[in-house]
Length: 203
Length: 203
DNA sequence: GTCTATAGGACGATAGAC
DNA sequence: GTCTATCGTCCTATAGAC
Figure 1 (tube, rainbow over the protein chains, first blue to last red):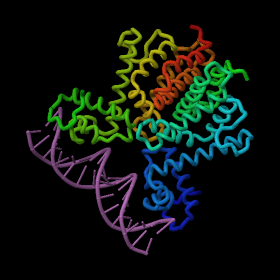
Figure 2: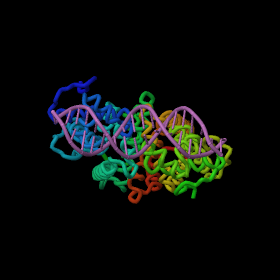
Figure 3: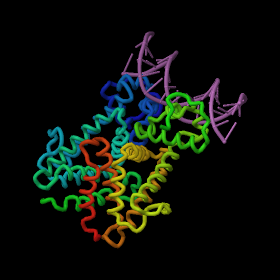
Figure 4: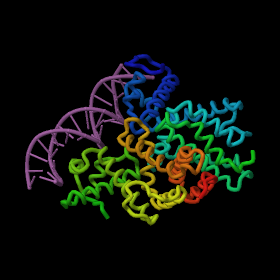
């Protein structure tokens, strides 16, 4: 348990406190999105006052970026482990087919709806030009598209188009699933869609 | 031009004033999302004070629902006209194939990115349980899925699964397109995806 | 029916003491 | 590293003028 029901009065080391703040904020943003997030709620859950919280993250936007950076690192680490690859790969796993990589990604996402909701909500929220995470998600979209495209280059007529369609289906299915978790089987829907998308891919 | 740069002092009929308010709010929500929307900004753009604005829409949530209802009506009307059908159909056009209906929808969406962004942002924002538009989008998702499913029943093995994939691709492509309008051709990407999704559909 | 004036409560952020 | 005090802005509600 990293939260505190009332005021702790404990003086934590900076790194440990920061980790606690990121964990709490990840949970709260996943529940209500970034705009609904109150610094007061985060501070309360950490046993801090609001200025105490701001001392660590600078601003509400700074808190958001800290959460996103931590999730990115966590995702890369976890996916590399799941695929039996070394954790030294800074970005995307090498030497694996796009269908296999996507399936691993979807299977992992299906086990953590709160994290998926955090990304789904923020990805759409950040379509607004001035959003604090706009540049983060723009860069992320460019990076993922480049990785997906590279994995099917020379194997299909239009690799970039297939890459976009794969991204679109994964993101779109996540939204359908989050709004109706019991009526939608994320993994099954993805595998069905993948069968159609990757039909003409030589494996 | 339905906005006012300063205070108008004009006394408009209720229906006309309401229409003006909805138009202004539609634009502002499309630019920054619902959470970033300030009632003060809406009132200013309409030449009103904030309580004057609230008299017409009741609350900020009421304003949001008024915007969504108006867009729904507008979309149905426009799509029916585009497909050469009567405007008496309350819901979805009858007697038309799913691929044709989707193509018409995508072609129309490609001409109005601001409206598409409004729906994309709100759809994701409303994944948060307490969001004022949560029930609206949940109902909308059920309705669209039922309509899509009905249009391919008895023509594919798993009509509901295909319906979900079609919804997912359309929503997902819109997000990719909105973040990179110049690098993404929404209609072309949809047609390419549709070719894969509807491959085994007897037309 | 339509609007102005005003006030309450919550939020993000800053300055400065300990 | 954490606190108290304070500011400006926002949404909402009420009372009452036209």
